[in-house]
Length: 401
Image (tube, rainbow, N blue to C red; front, side):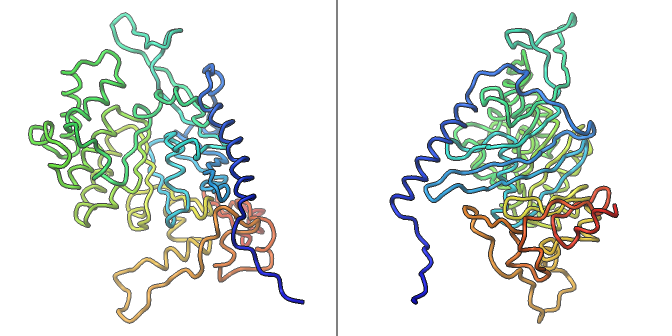
């Protein structure tokens, strides 16, 4: 009997069925995202009061004609107060999609947060019934602490968080600034949008202070257009813009990717200085393990849309447990590497994000694979009070912590 050929394409009928199912689900999620909701629907509470951000079981999917791409598939991790949390992993593992979900910048209708919670501890202005900030007898606007579940917020309410409470430094400074507005105009806009009663003079003064904070002479840059500045200068402007509203959380999405090595070092030093000056936290996303080792207090390792290991920076670098984490560290070139030694390469490829297997996603690439790895996807195992790993090799250790 002839062996059946494996079907590696979709028929027109299958594509139409997928499109119909996707359209129905996208319509439901878009309606939920654009609904009118009372604040009580998206108010929440932190599980640990020492955290500024708690991401729990987050699922962010992209609906395509070939199927549903599960870019973020059950991600959970926390960002403590006044800490730097580094997120590391190869391209396509879901690092940036997770951060874009926190900012609610996922492009709809094809991209949607499908499930999960993103709890954020906000310090927002007290507001009256009409939503206007309330001033006290001295004319000062009072603030109050609230915990919002960002994943459940209607999209028109996200202005409470985005820019003011959570700011983002994007990875491409060459294209992140608007080319038709001056640096001053773009910096002033942050203050004018997020500070009640702000005047143009107040906004300009704040912008100049921010430029000085990042090592730029305002007189030389305030009236300039983005194309007149180098990549390093533009990235400094992006950092100044992120700091202008005094956010509680800064998301730095590969902030040194487009810069040369010497400028990278300057930007990292600048972020380290800023972390010490502001009363906030940094979520640092990067491919570079060296940057993580230098900057981070805690490390989250992602693979194929899931967190596979997390812990303190010392635990991840001195005692890595997951075979993928070990492989990442072995694949990084070092000063002691011999000229004739071939750099380590993790074999195999990441599984198709549309048809993910039910077993461990790293199984086909893992040198330590056992029979248990063909079963259910491994749960997160606690190997120390702060160290967690999703691997069947450590199932027995979970009972000894």
